[in-house]
Image (tube, rainbow, N blue to C red; front, side, top):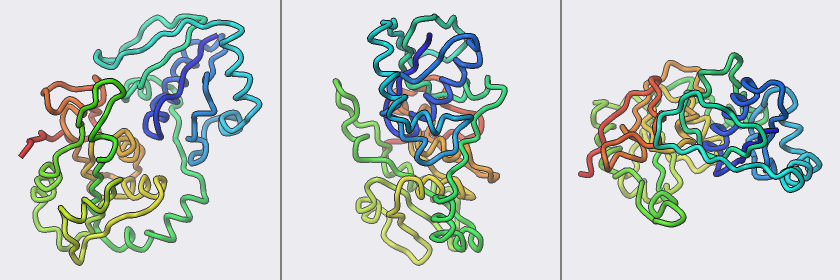
Length: 274
C-alpha cells in the first residue's frame, strides 16, 4: 500500500498526479492511492485516465482513503526538491509527499496522461477567444504576483519576478504591432500600471481554466515561475516559443530550484533585477 498526498493548487496537483501514475507503473501489484483526494480539483477541469474523475470526485472514496492511513499507519516520506529527480526504491506502507516539479516522472510513463480539458471549458474558451486566436498572432505574458510576494509558511520571501524581466522579454521580441499581446495575471491592476493599455493589448480577467487555455494557445509565451503556466505550455499542442525564467525559484541565487524544473521544451532566460 502506497499513498501520495495532494499539496497546493492546480499546477502542483498536476505534478502530483503524474507522480502517482509513475508509482502505479512501477508498483503494479500494490494498492496506490491519493491519501487526500478531497483536496484535489483537477478532476473539475480535466478528463483523467481510467476512472480517476469518478474517484477524485467521490465523497465515499475520499472517506475511505482518509480513514485507511489511520487504521494502517503509513510511514511519511518527503521527496525533497533540491536534488535532481531520479529512480529510487519505492517503499511499501508509505505516504509520499512532495511537489515533484519536473518532467522526469512524466517522461518515465509508458502512457503519460493527456490532461484533456473538459468540453464545457473548451467551448467557453472558444466563445471568448476563438476568433482572436484564429485571426491573430499572439504573445501571452503570464505574471504571477500576490502570494509569491510573501511566499513560504515559515520564512516569508519574495519569489515574484521583477517586472523589468517581462519588459525585457517583450522588448527582445521587437515590433509587436502585428500581434495581440495578452496579459494573464493574478494582479491585473498592477500589470496595467506597468504596461499601460495599447490598441493591441488584452488584459485577461477570466477564470483560471480560461487563463490556462489562453497560455496554451499562445504563439509565444513569456511565463513566470509558476507551475500553472509551466503546465499550460508543457501541454500545448502548438509549436510554441516559450520563454521561462532561468533557475525558476532560484533565480536570485543562480541555482535551479526545484531541480529538474527546467524542461528542454522551454527557452530559459536570465533574470536581472533591474
